[in-house]
Image: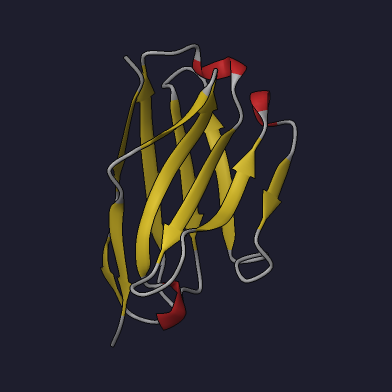
Amino acid sequence: QVQLVESGGGLVQPGGSLRLSCAASGFTFRRYDMSWYRQAPGKERELVATITIAGIATNYAHSVKGRFTISRDTTKNTVYLQMNSLKPEDTAVYYCKVAGPGRDYWGQGTQVTVSS
């Protein structure tokens, strides 16, 4: 079955960096676009970044453009989110998602907290 396992979250000071990973299994990773979402307390889940198959194209939310970079490694079935210049408003649970046949699949999420 489809599994997405995020890791790499934690507590970081404003201006710091983190790299999130999402290990995928149970489907042909190279054939699907992959996305990162986040959900802050009391807010709706929002799209952060998307990468198409083979990494041909990427898209970012306006709030993270120029600070975050999404990438994928087909040899490891893993998608990454490099987050630089982190701000307190980036604090959220970050989720990996794949739009599979007939439904979306989500990971369990990883907490990112940006605070001094």
